[in-house]
Length: 221
Image (cartoon, rainbow, N blue to C red):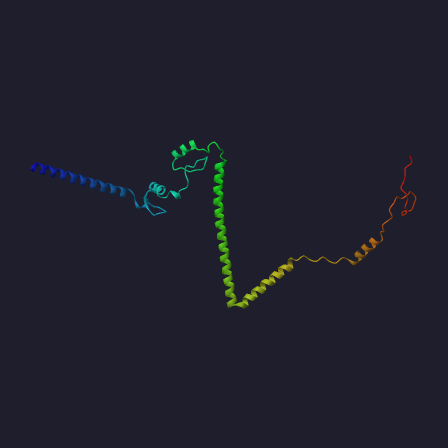
């Protein structure tokens, strides 16, 4: 019994020593890992603010925790699909059904995606412009109501001034009226027109008067 008790106590002591040694090793490893990175090496994730020790750890974290925010990689040039690794992309390209087709399909797909993105951006910009214009119009209406309520006399003077400037611009841009025709030139034109009667139709024989009417000339055979 004493021998068994002695062996059991030795086994317990050995187990306790192993546990203490393992705890010391683990604590030393944690201290070394914490000392290997300074505070300047820690990068917080832009999406969840998780601390990452170094650029490699940050890239791995974003790739694993936020795959939806990454741009598509390893895109097939035949069908336009993206794959997680180059090996899967290679095996897919070997069996791609669209490989025998022309590249116009993938180009059309990329063009359609680009066009849809551009149209979305344009709609958003047009919406922002409309909102900005409507806000400006609303502000101008409010200012007009406020001036009409507080100082209507100055508002009326300003409107009269603007109307006077518009009339002046209209009068300055109107074309000058053409001068009336000269009376002498008008009379001479009328006399010349009346002094030129229309002569009779027909042929004129040699030696005859200028206004005589003759028969048509016939040629002897």
